[in-house]
Length: 407
Ligand code: SAH
Ligand code: SF4
Image (cartoon, rainbow, N blue to C red; front, side, top):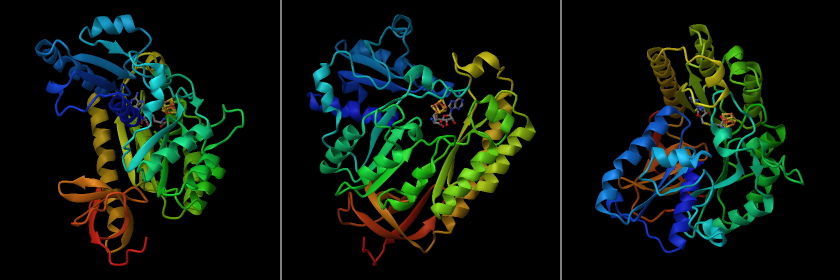
């Protein structure tokens, strides 16, 4: 979500005459897009602001703006806390000094090959640990026409993959007069000529519909990859997290998805060390990961966030050391699982959309979201090619351009 918003802000600035500077020292304007999902993210932006102090001394013309989820309603308090910041604007909003009429310019002129479109703002779920609904407000879907039009423009301007983003994309459309849903939105975007791939995140296990699973199975551009955060494998913890499903429901959902879309890559999110999490409850998460074998797991140690239900109702009683141990256990397990899954791709040929170059090598993703690297002297940016995989690791694949390039 933050990446999507940063991309849009960057494009807006360029369209009104700003140019990206080579370094922060040369900049006249620095915009910090903050995240406060965990204390570690908040610390990062706070220390960045501190580091900018000396720049402001050297360049009195420098303006600093802060956006993202660190910006709450109490701007006066923020101004006192960060006196060097000139402007504050909330996540997803536009800079206050920019003419509202210009905000139509937020569709990037030169989008990245794989580009984001935000389809729904905010969240109505109030999972007990999560600060997002307090900082991003309630759900608000954008109209389907607006999104399809934006997708068409982005493809005309060079995008080849579109990633639809929202805190819970499964609830897209429930607040619209025509009650459109994610499946119908995917069906419409799938028709855009020149678009190669379509992805979406994040799904909520309590809201993912069979209609959506059917859409993934039937629409040719929709990639076989979904992010389906489980957060915990124990029902009592899931209840305290207010996730609205049980581990059995989640298992059954994964089974249904895999039955309809064979070989689909599923990634998940896990929080370890939620208040009161016992060894046995943690083991339930580990067992679920072992059983369902995800392609990737985003692991987080519970971090109390002021204002959330969990921070008010539960004591953060799992010691930091225990949280660290649990993170390490899950990381090791997931690394082993990902290594095994990726090793099965050795010798096979995968379809890759080329997104750019890294350290001299072409870099792209397979339909199942695997990062693939290979060498070639031709300009292949934005093309879909087949790559024969010669080396695998838990995090990426390496290969050579396949001779049977028919796609
Ligand atoms: N809307 C998505 C994810 C939003 S936040 C969902 O419902 O899953 C992204 C991830 O950050 C979450 O999946 C969760 O694993 C993690 N997270 C959120 N709040 C957290 C907290 N207080 N402590 C630790 N991890 C947290
Ligand atoms: Fe946070 Fe839950 Fe909403 Fe995701 S669904 S953003 S975890 S409140």
